[in-house]
Length: 115
Image 1 (cartoon, rainbow, N blue to C red):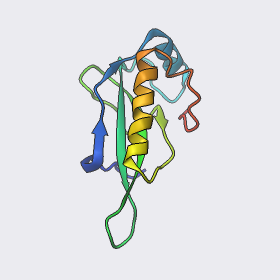
Image 2 (tube, rainbow, N blue to C red):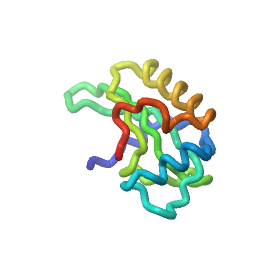
Image 3 (cartoon, helix red, strand yellow):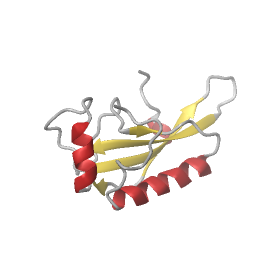
């Protein structure tokens, strides 16, 4: 797995993981039991295309994190499809923020959910 591009990594404020989402997160086998995931870290990430001119596409990623924002970039809870527009990625990130604040992120149909 390629190291993420943290130069073009725009995270939203951490959001506490609700009870229902925490139960769903604990059921996913790829996440460590006992890992101190207490918050969601939601970010818009730039994906640089390999071409002569620097050009980015964008995706939204959701990571379980602790209250300090520490997370494992190798284990996202969700990664969106790549989009050409940062505005589109930002809109999706805002929708995911709203769902996570309502403790409904795990019920959302996340097409690219990691499991």
